[in-house]
Amino acid sequence: MRASLKPHPSDFGNKDYDKLYFQFDVNRARYLRGKDKTLKSRYGLIEPNLRLHKAVVSWCRKKLQSEHQSYWGSVQDYETLSSRVQEDFAVITGDDQVVAVYFSFPSNWAPERLLGLSFSEVHHPVPNFPRSAKESVAMVKAMVNKGPYVRFVWTVSPDSHLDHHPEYGVFGSWDSPNAGYIRVERQITVPFPAENGALFLVRTYLTPFSRLSPDQNATLVKALSSLPEDVASYKGLSQSVVDKAINLLKVMDI
Image 1 (spheres, rainbow, N blue to C red):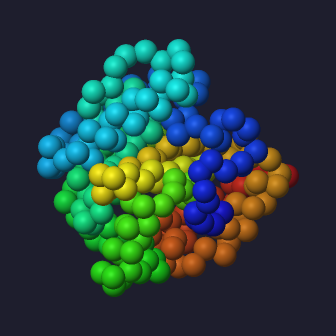
Image 2: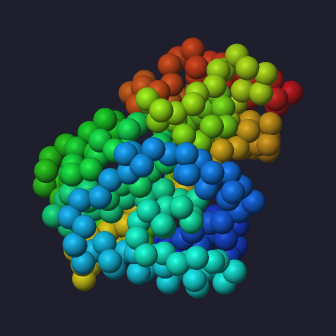
Image 3: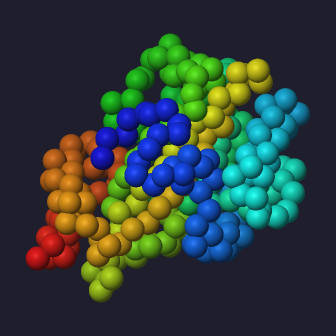
């Protein structure tokens, strides 16, 4: 439940699947349909002539070819890449500027507002995130020159909708009969030191409470019960929502 960085690849119990940067699965068609419906105005690219952009696209194309031999279709730009993979992604320069944002499945935030911002500006709402410019730049330099790294962040949701954009997303109710999902983001940073930048891959997973094992159920109840107020607020979880989620989990564990 802790969002700690680990080297990629790391073994999380999924064997070779954990080694993949681009994790295709049986839900791929659903993800791609969702991306096809995303307003193109929500995507963004600045400084299109940067060598970094060409390097990222080339790396992704080669990685897709090596990871998925049955993969079809060429990848020549970010828009094409986005339409082929289940991951969302962003690109940041070593000079601390977000220069590309292609996110279709955000968790209660607006990706298009991040373009041109610094790392610290992007993460300003995150509790306990370093506030000094020096610390922020140091973190960016680490992303550019070290790694790749992987980490996971989580929240709970009443519904299985992938797009939780605050303005355009679809949101369910905790009072619905099938409410209760754990929403997990798998985040990977890929360094491009020669081009002074980094790629940030994010894959969203949704698992209904009903599919959690007893141990997973108990872990989630414990995490929700001990969630600090500022972290809960950042995740958009009011106390009433936390209570409803815990009650649903406890009922399923009986």
